[in-house]
Amino acid sequence: MQYLLMIYSAEGAGPAPGTPEFGDYMQGYFSFTQEMKDRGLFLAGEPLEEVSTASTVRVRDNKATVTDGPFAETKEVLGGYYLLDCKDLDEALECAAKIPTATHGSIEVRPIMKLPDMPE
Amino acid sequence: MMTNQQKIEAVVREHHGRLIAALTGKYADLSLAEDVLQDAMVEALSKWSSEEWPPNPPAWLMTVASRKAIDRIRRQNLHQIKINQLELDAELDRSENRGSPLAGFNEMDIPDQRLQLIFACCHPALAEKNRTALILKVVCGLTTGQIAKAWLVSETTMAQRLVRTKQKVAKAGIPFSVPDTPLLAERLEAVLEVIYLIFNAGYQSSHSTDLIDIDLCEEAIYLGKIVMTLMPDQTEVVGLVALMLFHHARMDARTTEKGDLVTLSEQDRTLWNRDQIATADKILKGALMKGGLGPYQLQAAISAVHCHAATFEETDWRQILLLYHHLESFQADPVVQVNLAVALSFAEGPEQGICYLDNLPDVQKLSQYHPYYIARADMLRRAGDRQSAAAQLEVAISLTDNLVEEEHLKRQLNTLNAEMLG
Image (cartoon, rainbow over all chains, first blue to last red; front, top):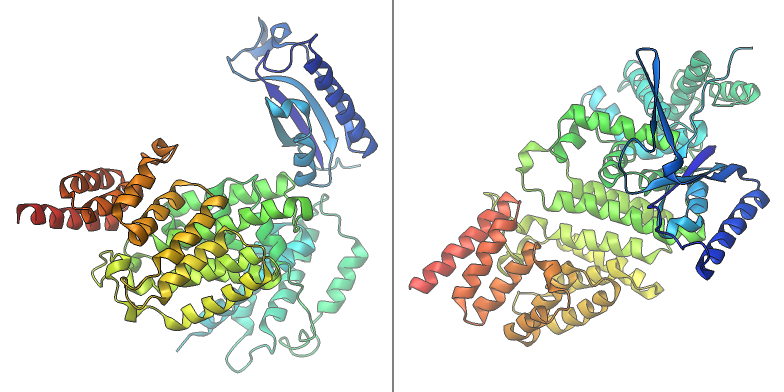
């Protein structure tokens, strides 16, 4: 099964760039990604730019409007994701717990919806 | 005299967990398993009669349900369930009727996958209230209506909750398996928690038992026994079953015929179920001998001491105090702390009990826990301070949401007030 692991945290909550802790933190991500690849679970995974770079699009009455930034004030923002191919939820949860941000943020684990096969 | 339908329902109920588990194991779909077992029961209603009863009823149900499952899978053409066509054909071959519609299934061995089902139902990714509902439905075979009544919600609400929970199990990929070693301890704890939650819901239910035709305590004991039988080396499971049996043995003495609460000190001990206490003793001893002490075994041991005291006055409070000290090292929560204080007050005097509570570092955690005030009130009364005792009882009354208990506390308060006037 495929799972999307969404990494949420309050901006500025993790180790600050330039500190020794930040180095360890990033190293944690490199090792995690490598482990996912070695175990054959990794499908995709990237960090996102900060939430201030976000744009929000809505289409109403056939007209697209774009607004700056996030559309809702939330404490924790999406900072990155992994798309993994796991045996079951337990494996996905085990991986999620290894993501370095899990120690100060949270990881939402969502199964990818399986659409019925298209007729040939 | 049971009607044919009642007899069939009883068979289905008795084997429900095992059949649902085996069908879920086979077709990886809990909802499908439930549907086809229902179908098989409907078919049984038309095929079984007192003259023609299948020699092996669960095997008959399993075979017919399997055939219904294959029919449904074929009909719905569910691509995501990849069952090899050959496997399906072989399955059909095996389940083909040979001669009489009731014979031919005797040799069938239904695999026991109830543990897998129980672990799936108690998965931490499900909300607690959904875990209890699901396990009662699929393992115990209760109806949605029965579960709704027990939890005081409408049948529609409960039906929706069950549908959503089953969808989550299926869509989130909650495994149908017993977890491996690193996860097992934690997940088993979750299973035991769900079972004990069901037991306590039954034990403390404040509504009249006339309203409910099921005994949640018995359902919890049934679940506990399944896990105990299938995981005999897990001594905490055994401890939980013993604990539930000790509590259950005293059930009849806990309330008067009117439904009023009777505290341990006032209970008629001849009403305690001695057979059940003996059974609990035996299994608890077995667990304690194996080692691996844990909180459920300790609580069971405390219950055992109470059960063996001929009168309240003869209770071995020193032994109970010792056991609570052990228990506190496992879980220093309000329940344990208040009970420890009570044991201390009987072993060494009410002042010692009050002193222990007053010196707890996190006493504010107890401020919303009404047994704390009940315990304090009793200790204060025994220490001769009726005025303060009454004040504590009033706080307890304002905090409890259990009607039976509220009545009981009000009676205590009246007695106390009368004593002060007299």
